[in-house]
Image (cartoon, rainbow, N blue to C red; front, side, top):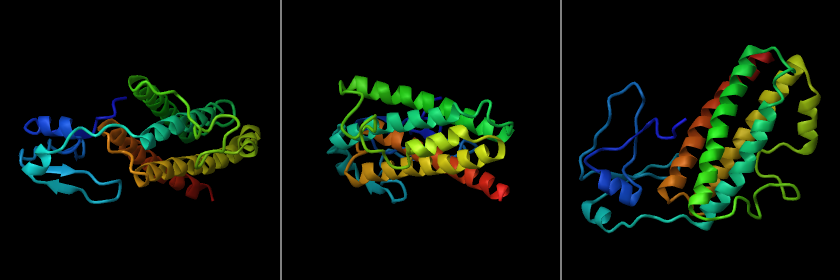
Length: 222
């Protein structure tokens, strides 16, 4: 599942984009490709913040941003965060006949498996360990949104409509935690490296959409 399906880079500005990590334009799949002129390069802001249009002189002075400690901690923490989501989707089979829940779980399972592989490759390419002091493994404090042992056991024991409700409630909580981790990444000055920024933006977009869908599903159950 490629992460760049909605990212279109102007052929004219390829050198500036790849070299600086800027100039990426988000465009709906149904629209024609957006091709800004080479003199119009936008440096994206953090999610929810406006970008900055750079002058040609500013672009020429940019050097490729390198990954930071904040980037490393984000990736190290997001891997076990994703792994818990996969543990939750693995509970669906045999606990509910709800086709919508099954379809949602399948989507999350496929996308987060692929994203874990990308994050592991990110770490391997930079020769950093797969876990850190805040990675959320056994013995460490849970990261934002992660289920406690009691919550996970409650979900494991539930069946049918009760399982559906808890699955959606806990997965919304889990996804909102991921969004909080993304905000923490940018607040800490991370996300300047293009690869990290792209991962964070894709996580933010996909999980925001899924949160909306799950909230709609929950509303119909009340």
